[in-house]
Every structure is written in C-alpha cells, then in structure tokens.
Length: 208
Image (cartoon, rainbow, N blue to C red; front, side):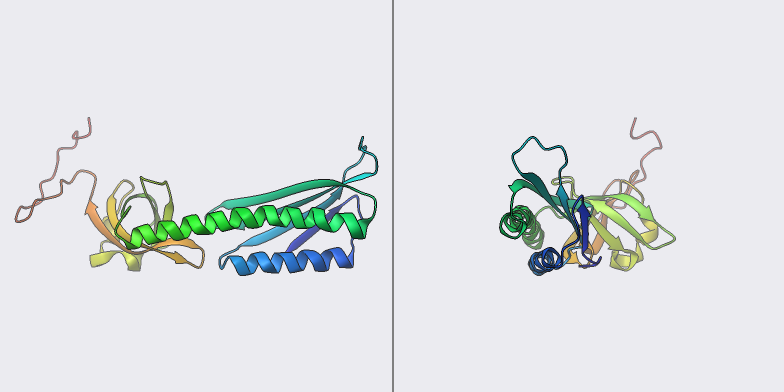
C-alpha cells in the first residue's frame, strides 16, 4: 500500500485486538492487489439506535488508480464485542475483496485484449507539455492511460494535441494503466495519407 492503513473509531474506544484484526485483513487485501493506494477503516457505534442492543458499523474503503474507490459497509447488533463485532468487520472486508477480485479480473482482461491487438486506438485527452506527460483515453471502454513523452514514437510528443488519435500498447504500471508506446495516427486538421501519398492539410473550417 502506498499510504499507511488508517483506522478511525467513532463513539467507541480504540482497541488493540480490533486494530490487529483489521491489520491482518488489510494485509490480505494488499496481497491481492499490487497497486493498492490506501485502505481506510471506520468502526462506529451508532447512537440512538432503535434496535435491542448496540448497533455497530464497519466501513472499509480502498482506493486504486486511477481514482477508483471500493467500499464495504456492514452493520450489526453487538452484545459481546469479542464475539459479534469481529464478524461485522470480516463481512465488510469480504465485500471489498469481492469487488477487488472483479476489478482485478476486468483490468487483466483489458490488458489481454490490448496485447492481442484489440482496443489499441485512443485519443489524447490531457497534456502537460512542460512536465513531459499526458493521458490518452480509449473510446471503447473510456479507460484513461498515462504516458510519458519518452513513450511517444519518433520524438513526436511536441506534435500531440488534445484530440490527436494514436495507436498504443498498454501495460499496468505502478500507478495504474499506462501506455508503453504511443504512435500518432492522425492529427486534427491533417488527413491520414494513403500509401505513397503525401499528407494534405485540411482547411481551417474542415470541422464545420
């Protein structure tokens, strides 16, 4: 995990055994995903409950790149903290684990499709020219991919503009999906030439 585990208690005193149990479950999550950013856990005793006994809540939230959040939220009546609170925490983590498995499988499937030559076209959506990086977006699944100027073939980083169509190869980086190679297919205002034909600039009002 890139950010240390965060445990928060609301209307309940901090407990060493709860902390240890949460750490064990969080480590399991971290082992399931190699790019987990953070894990936040809230243990709360709800006030003014109409239930017989005390109603407790466990919420687990993890974040993945890019800006992906998975949440598990479980509640239950607790008479004995050691007996009944632990299953509530476990179920909250299990809910996140289930989501994490689906998300990991989806991302692996996306990477496999790209490796097989599918969904390899994208459009530049954001550029940070001075910093030397940007983001492209697949029109098929809406996934965004980070790329560095060094990944742009033929030193064409300076030719990129928002809207430029590119061909790319995807991989999973430390901070999420990224493009390992980026090749310009066409630029706004430039028609893609046929083989043996020179590129022809389109008039300024070609989009009208």
